[in-house]
Image (cartoon, rainbow, N blue to C red):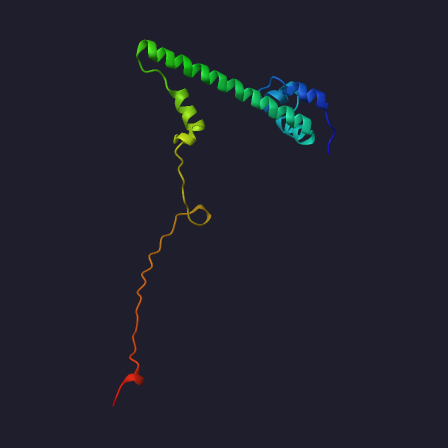
Length: 139
């Protein structure tokens, strides 16, 4: 392995308050984003700190989303007017799958090596041939 430029403690300090944004961590340490990835791979406790910071960041984003939804609901109730429902749509699409709000998924099917799909029609004719049993005939 290459020489470590920063200590584990320095890396963990840079992670705190970064929101788990690797570019921010790299800037705080004066290293590249790849070096941050190397530190996370090298030190399990740094990876743990990163995972925890990412969860805190997501919790904060969810709190803001919840607050916005509540404010929009209150505004709609008071003014009896339609409000921007982007936050609600995003929440339902990303978290409401068990209620049938999963985002629509589009699937594209291609042929060999990403080329056009080749279609072939096959017609099958089944012919049954019945042969009379000669043993049963009387002369």
